[in-house]
Image 1: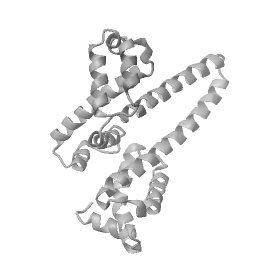
Image 2: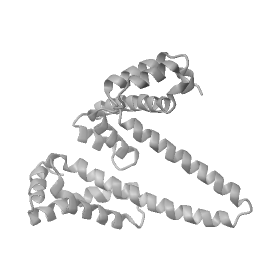
Image 3: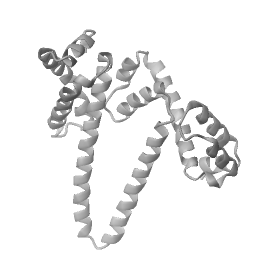
Image 4: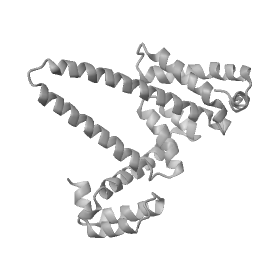
Length: 235
């Protein structure tokens, strides 16, 4: 996308139909590339791209900062990819259920499948809670890293979005992931703080809002506590 993109985005946002057509046209190669990589050339790529661009057209007037268009566009695309993957998973699960129904050990197989899905759902819940502990700058790095992990962005594109060389981008991703891991440990520990009297007292003094200060306080406790540390880092 060219340096003139913010001006084009601003015009499209303000109701210029020609600018909107030009913006959609300029965005299509990037969107097709991202969706194509994420879905590995699946037959539904065209449908996902079309739905994503419909959402762009519908939502462009709500975009506050034209300079953030690319990140906003990627968020829409990734949401559409996620929806498509979920739709596929539902379809595959239905097929698997029908296959299991024909097997001799149906109840056992279905129970294993349910347990697996519950475990995955729980991991996602913990991650969603952990992300709340990240600061705004880390959140931006996290969103780009998540796109990279989903094969929607390459590392050079991530670095370009951050405006830094690739080696600096790698360092920022590393720092973000360390803080995210700490946040996950805190989230896990706070699920049942009653196992440790000191952690329980600390949690009661906390106002419930994630912040850098409380992240450091909880981390300091977890690292040095003979009760919490083995629970988190050994079991």
